Image 1 (cartoon, helix red, strand yellow):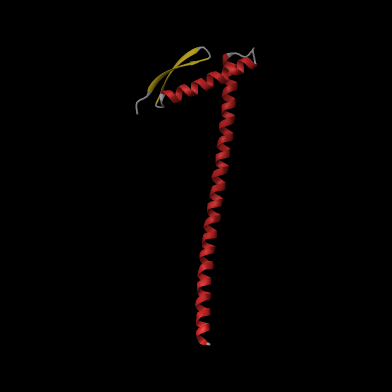
Image 2 (cartoon, rainbow, N blue to C red):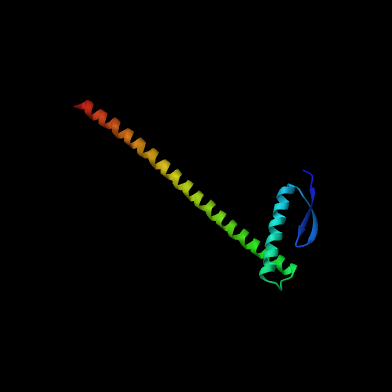
Length: 113
């Protein structure tokens, strides 16, 4: 897939990037970044654009790490649930076979009377 060149405006500076992502997607990312950095500078009037970029990036990395950790925990839980379900299925199948065996035995005993 050929790369798209997309012009972005973030905190008053223009950037052109090449990406295989859609323009709509990249522009939405740039809009969020611009808004978050501008909010950072409103909340901290002495912060430079570079400082706002670093603080915003740290916030994004924190969010990514927590999301990744949460996803890893969910995958581990799902794996455990699937293993438990497989064990339960095996136990149910064994119980079904035992019930069938007991029914046959009971039928045999009834015939003997």
